[in-house]
Image (cartoon, rainbow, N blue to C red; front, side, top):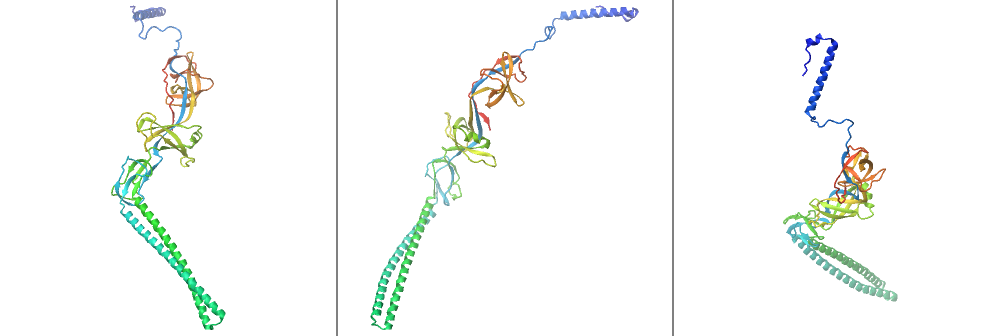
Length: 446
């Protein structure tokens, strides 16, 4: 190693020679350091970089195929199942429950007796009504006899009056009696006429009493029918075939017309009521063909139930701005899964309101949004091609697109991974994904 000159020696040399020696020492040291680097081999970072500009690598992306498939638009909401025929039953008369003949969950037929009340009071009222009816019948008979008697008396008095008239007229013409006797005959004639008129009034009175007696009998007959109904109403009967959904009465309870005893429901006639915003009214009222409706119950998650639109409310609720749809539900599942829908179950109802049978579809991950613009990147000739699109129907994994400015054919490759920072025309290295083939899922909108 060459050591630098001492300070004393350097000071003795002229300035030009000192500069020349310092430069020579620097070159020697630099050569030695280069030799040391060469002897140590390549640097930890790898081989020495080659001269010239570095080449940019292609962006690695993952792609999927553009497809044509059916896409559907559905409205989805949650509601509860109701029975179209469900009633609360209570006795029509007050009384004490002496027998319960059915229990919750029992299937009953129309006319089956559900409970019995103590019939003693109703039976006594029925017996009293029968007695009153018999009395009314007797009153009618008496009134009829009174009419007959009044008619007979009238006939008798009519004959007497005619006789008195003839006797008076004969003696008045003959002039054989005194004026006093003629006056007596005239009085007798007028008295007979008065009695005849009284007899006529007696007949009218007897007929009126007969009419009153008949009205009284009708009242008695109605009272008898009412008593018979009250006795029949001590037995509470089912008004239609159905299922006993609830029992609130117990033996010994005092119940009446305001006390519900049973809830009876028809589990074969099920509906659900949907409240939808008024902007959707045209979707349902203007449907050209029956809507496809399905429901899934929270209690039976694997079972699918078919529905049908039953009626649409013609009015809009001004408070909520919505209208009512009533959907009839088949209580039996479409699949082989066991279980039936029951009133009160929570269901998720899906209504297919529109179909696009030949939609152009890409995975949702292929869609990129920049402000209000939606776009996808196609891979063409190893480069990315940016295409603006309009969104259509969507499902859980796919979205319908309509390209703007150019066409996209089914089978074209669209970037699904790596498109966030991708630019139009950038070189890409494509890695295909396994395309999944599934039935179109409904568009889930509230």
